[in-house]
Image 1 (cartoon, rainbow, N blue to C red):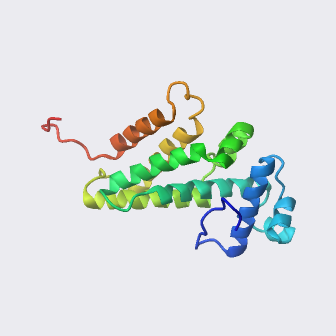
Image 2 (image 1 turned 120 degrees about the horizontal axis):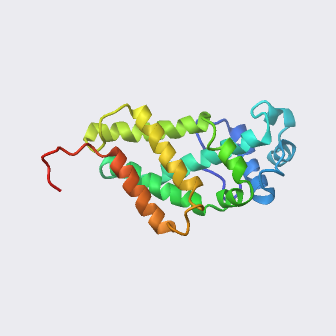
Image 3 (image 1 turned 60 degrees about the horizontal axis):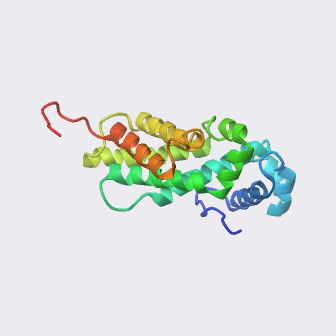
Length: 205
C-alpha cells in the first residue's frame, strides 16, 4: 500500500483497494482531469477491463475514492467514550477539519472544484450511503442514551450529511469570515443544535 493510502475496508475487494490506491496516486500527481483509467490500471498492475468493469470512467472512480476517504477520516475521528451525540459531533467536526486540510482534497478543490461538487457531493452512491449508515448508527446510539432527539435516524443522518458537506465544500467561500477554528466551532454548534433533544418549555438555561 502506498504512503497516505486509506485504511483497508473489509467490505471492498482487495483488487478494488489496489485500484483505489492507484487512483489516489494519479489524482495527487495529475489532478482529476488528467487521471485516466488506463494510467490507474497500469499503476495498479491490473488490466483495463478489470477497472472498466467496476467504474465507467475516471470521474466515477475518483468520486468513490474521495467519498471513501471522507467516510474513513470521520469514522477514525469519532471518540470511543462519552454520550453518543458528542461522539458523533466530535467525529464529524474533526473529520471535516481533516478533509479541509487534506492535500488530496485541497488539490481537487483548487483545480477541479466543479468536478468535486458534481461527482462527490452531487450523487448518492455506495460510499455516500455508507457515510449515511455511519451517521445513522451514531444517531440511533444517541437516541438510545437520550442524547439525540427523536426522529427517523435515516432522515436525521441525511441532514447531518448535508450540513457536514456544506462545511467542507463551501469553506473556502467564507474563509474570510470563518477561519479553520471558527468553522469548527460553528459547525459544532449547528450539529449540536440540530441533534439535541428538545428542551422542555419550563426548563430555564
